[in-house]
Length: 162
Image: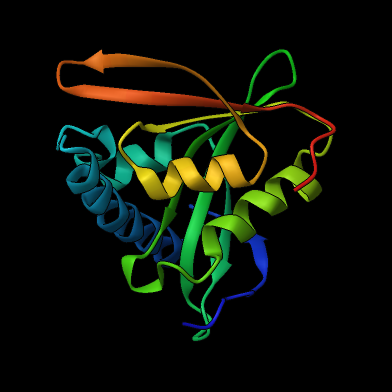
């Protein structure tokens, strides 16, 4: 399958069509993750469009070959200057085309260069774990925020190549 190298751009969730696309893609992607990790209680699966828009996050999107949003990354800045990735989602129809890597690399090199970046994912989400490992994140302690769910934490410190 060809790699997608569409442009990365900021997303404005005040735009109805953008917000609807992000909401749809997030639900589709988290449904796949829920299956991978054996846990269907992922909060984003039950998040309304209004709740999504209320989140104090910054958003980046990547387009597929058709120009439509194929994936997105949302983050928040910590008081110490670190960046915490809240979500990184790709439409299942666009899996394995490099979109998640493109978004994460953009965050690391263009949006938040020289800053620590943290992220968590389901420990059993092998594709996400492999992505973070490949891009120089170090795995920290696993934790269990809910019965039946094990999360893996990752941190990437400045000075590591992407």
